[in-house]
Length: 360
Ligand SMILES: Cc1ncc(COP(=O)(O)O)c(C=O)c1O
Image (cartoon, rainbow, N blue to C red; front, side, top):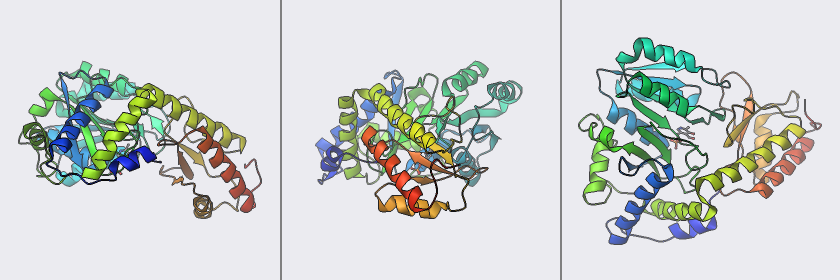
């Protein structure tokens, strides 16, 4: 994940959180996010939430829940499971269907559960790109099933690691969540929720948290245009420039194309080096890829990571539960040349670790 010098330069100044200029920037960010989601601007608004992505997920789950109904969580990895944890901590009733980490969600099962138990749920929540493995969940199909079951059922999507970098149809999504530092290529500091206005209005008075009350946060932003509590000013300045940069690149389709190309180079190169992917190509996204550890006694992930890090290459440890994997992310201000360079570094590191290539 890299940030461009353009974004770094933009955030390198101070601005008052109540300045007219800053209030204008907040407004532009909010409307631009709705525009790029391609959801109808008359029906949707953006609520900005200080903190990391999890804060926004927690804000949505806490603020939308009618405590008399349960939230159905469709989980295929750590971030789906985290939604369950958020509900448990807040005393919100939830039911989690835990699916395979590397196979497509069984839509018929989802349909059946909603058909037989739909009345007990107030919302269905799912992660778009489950960053745990890299798998892309079929949110359009799930959204259709949810709305066919009952139009009043809320559909909540955590698109943290995909929004801005994957072309997707968000029709039917009531609350779409992402954060500043993923595919929009800003720096960490806030997250955002693109919310259906009529559903947001219904959230009034439901949250049991002051700072994470999505309705109150929205009312604050709509009222005087300001955050209720101290905003991450520098981060927002950087994000505004990151949105300009996205437009210059050609919007989400162009960015998705670059990420796809980055991802293709990584997958092909890694396969040449002998690595196998945890998710097959048909179901994998193009944001992050999980690779099995090679079957070689000289391979220690910590050493592999450290040696790559010494060369300026940062990869991720694995996050799936049933296999030894590591992950390579390819989003951010990264280009094909960066991918080829990473592959060269991996080959050098493997040789230094006395692991012959291709690995087995
Ligand atoms: C899909 C998804 N959901 C939620 C999160 C949590 O975001 P954060 O670490 O910013 O709280 C992440 C983080 O990578 C993510 O990928």
